Image: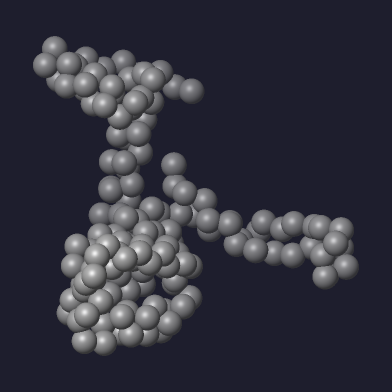
Length: 161
């Protein structure tokens, strides 16, 4: 691990220590690492460096809105290659929240999320996107596999550092 030293004025250090305490960090180093990871992720996304991502799309909608639930389901079915899973919960007699896990090409995930959030009746949409690297060379061999010990290939999504 590489060591760096930074200087902070007293007020900034005091505010940073308050943030560290509020978020439950055990030390300044881990807090700085998380801040750096977050900023590097934002930078990668702004430069559109990442070809693939995993994401969580959360939104609230009024389920009494005419055919909205059916439209949302149809959009997800149309993009089944991006949609991993959806969690649905009822908030009250009119509103539901959904959280959809997505994976795939970053621009396709963004376009899908924007289209879903733009549907009439969808409120409070938020996309949380994490860039990933694809590991397509990964292979497992299992003695009980249906491939008679030849193993199987699958895709690993490795979050960017």
